[in-house]
Structures are given as structure tokens and as C-alpha cells.
Amino acid sequence: MGEELREASGTRAAARTEGAVRIVYGIHALEAAVAGRPVAEIRQALAQPLNISPRAVAVVDGEVVAEGHLLQAGQQLEFVRLAGEKGAPRDTARSGFFPPLP
Picture: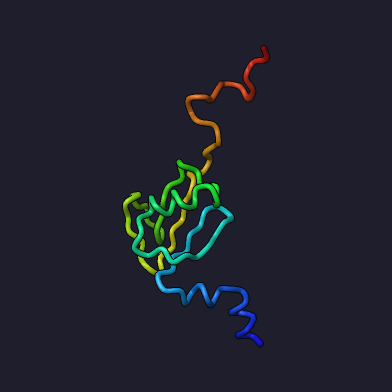
């Protein structure tokens, strides 16, 4: 019964998948057979489903990597935002919290 539960959860099956890479962004995490593909391709494919910020930094196994980095099976790719970073672009920031009323 225990083996059936592990397989039903997908954890064991994903770990056995050839070329599996763990991909994390915020609370979102998944494993996919994307070994051999560049980070940029993964970012583009998952940008909308995982809501990945274009400003998020790519980190593989704890090291910041370039968009051209080719992923290997068993690696973990994380897209992270810098601590304290807000959603509004810097060029639109104002000194107050809200823009003046018309």
C-alpha cells in the first residue's frame, strides 16, 4: 500500500523521469524532463503558468547562472526575486504611496 501511495503522489515517478529538473518559483514547484535545455527556454515556457517575473534571477543548485546555461538531469532551477523588491518599476516610483488625485 505504501508504494502505491508514493506512486500516486507522483513524487517517485517524477524522480525516476529521465532528464528531470526541479523548477521552483515562489510557492510553485514542479519537476519536468527539461535536461539539455537552456534556462531562457524554461523561463519563456513557464513565465505565464508560474507567473515568473522577468526580473527574477535564475539560480541553479544555489549558483546564479546565465540565461544560456544548459540544465542537467537532477539539478534544481529556481527563479528568485531580490529581497525587498517591489512590483512597481523604479522609473514609476514616487516619493509618496499614491499619485496625486486629479
